[in-house]
Length: 246
View: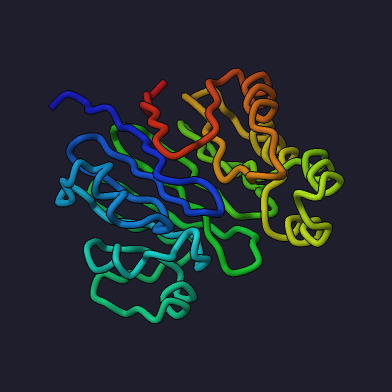
């Protein structure tokens, strides 16, 4: 058959709830279980038979709050700590191990360790219709070099200056400085990852999990687009991006 186009659909990308779908029309992979399963079904036009599985990064509710509903329907891959935190052990619960590759339909997924305030992984996701995607969220550092990337889905949660401004304007509490430094990716760290990696075959960069108070979306998008020379998007519910292969 002709190569189908893989599309990324954003269901949510904030502390209110995170969820993304990779879908080529024939099969789909769900990333995160932080939004209501009804929203995922709707985005899939209720064709849930094509879902090969779900992958989850960590136990916080904005990423895993609805995991039991998803795992009742789909094979769901998550760290043992996530299953323990949610008290779930159904037959679709697959325990993720960092560095191991899992097959979900034609998707190959490999978890890798991230630095958050609870055990957390990112994922490398490979599919014939899109090539290789890196998905990394909720981490205070991202020091990896990953060869052969085609798509980058990367946290860009806050910047130091936007955070300072938010504290001065009493929109963010001072205590957030220490918490964010240990749990989320700052703008400079996002840029550092992108600078360090070979992006010659990358089609686009999608910035995810921007903070409502401590981010500067316009600046993040324009500076990262200038740095990488790649189309750059900030994720919001309803955003769809066609994942072309370069």
